[in-house]
Length: 361
Picture: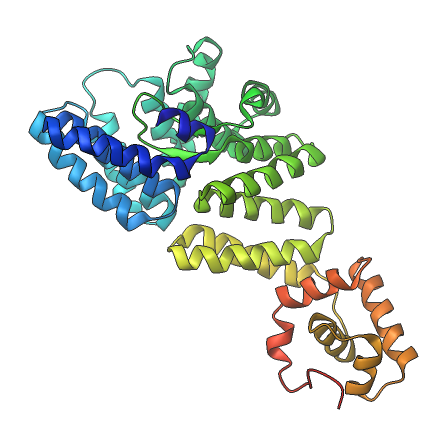
């Protein structure tokens, strides 16, 4: 199961979990049930089934209490905080930070990394920065334990906001060999955060290595989608849209941001939805403006009409329709009608132009 999580082979996990459940039922030990339910919660979280993740972690807490496991309460609240991070609910995040700080011994590196990431989510940049600097000072000496990849992933997400160029570069070099892995803590996964290519793309963008950033983010979108890690595919998609906008690929950026906003809304990922919507508004303000006639032509291109058919619908000559298409290509910096169609669909132009005929009379 740990191997399937780290390989991103999430589709293989239900069969493993079912096999494990047979053993758990036969042995009837709370400890084994606790591990089973935590793994189910981790799989539900990474695939965007947040209500299931909460349900499984509540059941895991009951099993952990029956076993009197010392980490049952802490890991329960940590899982709830991870779900709350995606849903935009501060309460469970606050509770989890308090639980971490109340541990009887000094914070372990993974506890420090978790608290750091949660404080950044609450916009407590000063507290997050202190923990970040502490963790970065010990990072070169950290052993490659089962939590190393998660610690590195948390550091990467904080470094792009609070770190120096040198710190971002150090993390980029450390994570680079794991670009095809999924970020997960092993030895009984508590959480999985999708493809490490997402964090590498963020770090590469922080270093202004735009080509590498685009390559990693495209890989993160593709691998997360293929594995079913939808929340982390969406996060990578929004980051990639930012990068494409910087490179003036506004049509693709708009398409990605609009798609991410819609899917995030469906999953209940309010922070990511709001981030994508802000991005959409920026892109729409920054993008080139078509004339009303050019918008009509773009709408008909999106509906698959030829220049001749566009001319018939709009009562234009074939040459005039062709010139309008050329002007649109020049304005948007595109080279094909397919790009115009994608740009128009991203802006919902076909649905806004319902009064236009869908073909020649």
